[in-house]
Image (cartoon, rainbow, N blue to C red):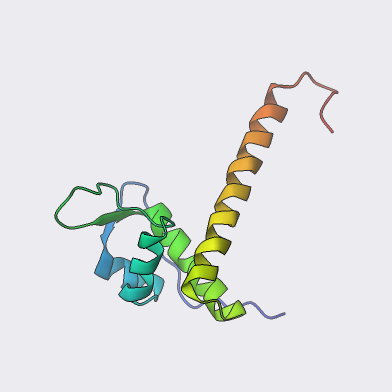
Length: 109
């Protein structure tokens, strides 16, 4: 397997992106990003704002979505499911790390 890096973006947690900027940086069309928003995979920082703005976590999710779509030829529904499951796995792994950190020395496996 050959891995190529085409573009690197330095992210700051405080950065915010419009939908158009998110589409440009993620290389996903706005229509596909809207489908991910409708499936609650991506969420604007303030859902009530006149213009939706997205955090850096959404850019990371959108780039992952692009790779999944390209590698596995997923339709929007399958893409949303895969991204939701990956997010759940990340959450569970974080919980497991936190629990292991609280265990007394010598008991972790």
